[in-house]
Image 1 (cartoon, rainbow, N blue to C red):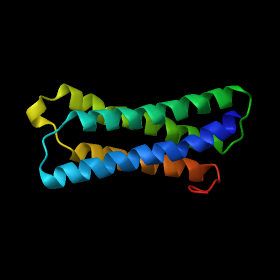
Image 2: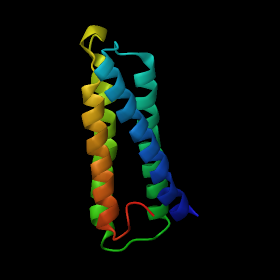
Image 3: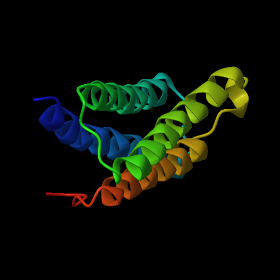
Image 4: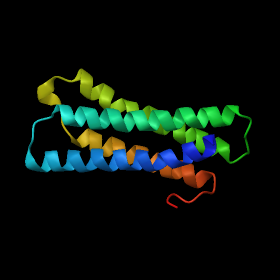
Length: 127
């Protein structure tokens, strides 16, 4: 059950990531000031990444381990760390200095790390 939950949550992570990228790109293109919606979307994305990682750790602690998991674990830990960086930096910046581009770049990097981690264990990214 943990395997299917962990594997299935990648679609929620992808959906949240697409929403972050889409909203940030739209807001940047239209010149909207940084707002609460961006903070909520970024928190939802980070939360889904964290929940997926937590389920993955629970699955790992259930005794399932094989050599390819090493690369998967490294990529997922990096993805979880990077997912926290942009919201943390934005929170510390003065409101007038907050922009949308770090959310776009950070989310693309996280999704790339996740895709690399999925490929590391020989699974298809989608499907």
